Length: 137
Image (cartoon, rainbow, N blue to C red):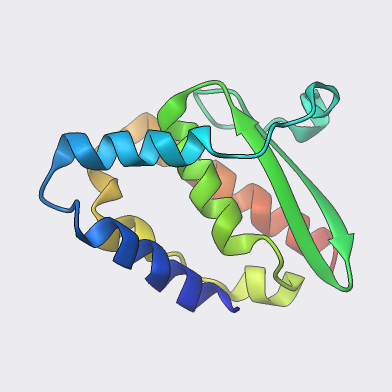
């Protein structure tokens, strides 16, 4: 599935919560909690996303010309956001990752949880996905 249908699916999942700030926040944190366990050995400086206020680790594997991502964060909200980014980008070809315009953050209302610091961190995470894609092109 390409990135736009995945983003649309995320938007649909959040639609029922769009008016309830607390429920949306809880759902975002719950999504982060459901991420696969991240190997402690991968929590290295090489996998650390620079520019995030929280600690965020992102690693990848290449299989059949597609990139598969895994990651972790030390904060619940950031981990939820990372989980959604992984959902959008994982299993995609490098060119598709590079050409993706993320729109689900605004359409889901998640932008309400993203202040200046998290906005910088979100941009840093998105850039890390794209740098990995560029290096595997």
